Amino acid sequence: MIYALLAVSLWATLGVSFKLTFSTLDSFIVAVYVGFFTTLILGINLLFQIKMQECSKIFKKQPGFFIVTGIIGFGIQQIFYLKGYQLLPASQVVVIFYLYPLLMLLLSGLCFKEPISKKSALINCLEFLGLYILIAQGKSLNIGMNLGTISSFSAALSWALFSVLIKHRKIDVDIGMFLFNLFGLLFLICMIPRFGFSYELTNTQFLGILYLAIFPGAIAFILWNRALRLTTTGICSNIALLTPILSVLLSVIFLHESILGVG
Image 1 (cartoon, rainbow, N blue to C red):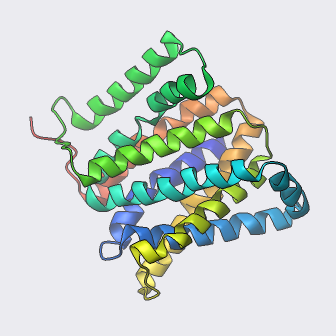
Image 2: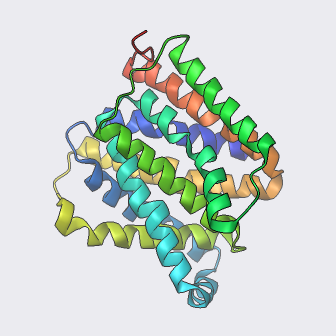
């Protein structure tokens, strides 16, 4: 539970860290740098665990799966997710992004013909409604249809699809996360001619990128994987619900965002 709480706490700092550090840097450039350092750290983790040879064997068995899934989860999703934070208040991104559990249910039914449990659907709807009420505090959030909203929803959809695709594959988690991040990074690099890139970073921006890559990125995933091995999935899922709440609280404290919409 301690590992899970630490991982969730680190994930919750992503929005605040991005807003405080990258006000003048395009979100795509941030995604490329963060992807590079996260992949590097996860690769070093595999070296320490002497899993690189096993990583190569696992990849050769299903290369298409790792390439496509990595592009969806850590390429496309990263572009949309960070773009959302660039364009919207962090609290609004949190509300929109946490539609992904509901989207997972729908995609599971469409992609794998899984029966959609009425109980699961109801629980997810109530969780989302509770998050919305907590943030809005009885008023309506001013969430309009704009590029930021579309980007945040696209990030939620991409992450839901990624989660559904990996759900039915039994793979070593450390190896899987390294390969997913690797191919997400390669996708981002291929997109550089389309979006552009800059090698000029201020010291603050470089430190911010390192923070995002090391803490909400690599370390959070490593802690989360250990938590899943040491306790039940149900407990971890319940703890994960703290992420949006902590994200919003941090946005209010450090960004001084007003989380109330227009009534």
